[in-house]
Length: 275
Image (cartoon, rainbow, N blue to C red; front, side, top):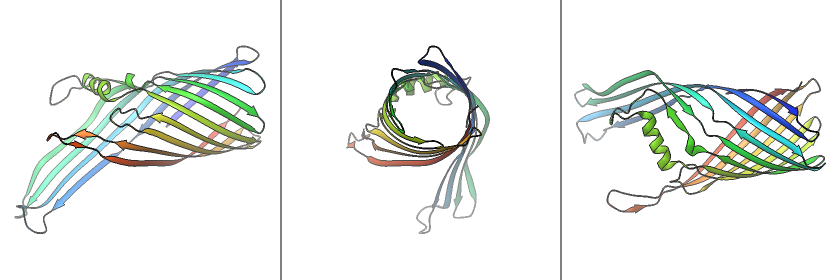
């Protein structure tokens, strides 16, 4: 979740400057279960279970600065800068691997639990440029946004259990090897007849993981209603599609190409208040 407060002011007759500060908080939960049985009695075990539970919690802060200039009655130019978010993460996890032999006796391969692992993540900074065209009740815009994912970093007093290296250095090395900056191009159309507005947007950007070679296509639909009291409600739908070309070479020196089609959709409901 992000709780955001912002303000803006006129710096000239046609230009306004704004700033917004967000408090970020949330919790994720990830579970993975693998189970194998031996109904044909081929092996000396009857059942094997490997389970993993991973639960990180987040809290942090971010800020955004932007200005908007009206070049004329129908044309607007906007620039925004999003500063790197500082997010503190606390992790807890557990892993259990148990094998039951044909005799019924269990053997515990793994019974591990961790809690209170803490570290800090600095997110990417972003730069946005936009040009808007307006002729009531329609508005259209074209935008470019730069995401500096390659500058993401991890800071903490944690060490890799296998190599003994600082975990921050390990993560930085992985980011340098696999993560690249993202260039995003977008266009949008908005129809606004008070108190109702409808919006459509589409964007194209490269994948931040350099071993996946396809672009990401995103489409957004939005509906908003603004009451005279200042309270407004929004409903949004987002769909993302991308193809993962996971080309790699096996240990046997055989080239392997794996094409995976991906799609992701979600709904969002929001509320705002205008003073």
